[in-house]
Image (cartoon, rainbow, N blue to C red; front, side, top):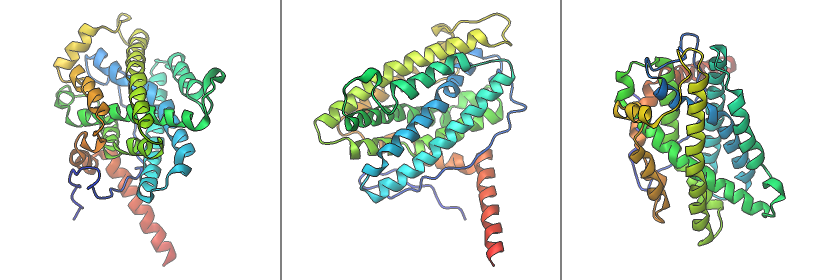
Length: 318
């Protein structure tokens, strides 16, 4: 009998929850470029995830690896390691989607070069342009950015798990499974980046002020990157009859169909995050995430593969 999913609990009362990477794989050979039929705007607005996440999640892992020696809490240390494993897997799987897009004639490298520059140089190990910021403070600032980004990924993860509009649109099942597997893991580890920042961010009031700064930087930059990414994909999709432009009108049309999250769902995540009493364990539904992971074709195949490897290892030792 499977273990029931954990109950939602306030952070200080919640029981430890095991966060571990799932070694999933996806077969993209039958996935069309327009994976939501007749919906180029919704398809490519969501496809911006593939442009941002390979470099972004590699950066998450790099920054957390730098900060890990500062963690003095055993449970948090374990959760951070699990978070790093999940994010590394996300990065790899989304990079495979970029390869698939390139194979279908949509080269994303002119855009992703800018994303790489952002994470590798502007947010790299050292402050850019020789800005005189102490190393510890630069690390804390980058951790505050990750915590703010993870606020949005938790909201998006919870949205995609409940997005009936996507099911009604009959999208490619492999892409939908990728998005929902990833979304479920974002909900699983929704609190880890926040807890990591709180643990290593130094004393208040500077820690809280930096949390506000992290969101003040993150929200507009994400909006800019997303609009530019959607514009790039629509303009360069070789299968569209005419080179399209990203438009708010088409975006709102996709929202009405339930193919994209509403602006309200995204926007209200910001004031929630800025409350002093806020904790991401209040965000989304862990029960829904765990339920999906128990049925996800990719996650189930990964679990079966891991069980087979364990069985083979035990047999070899017997």
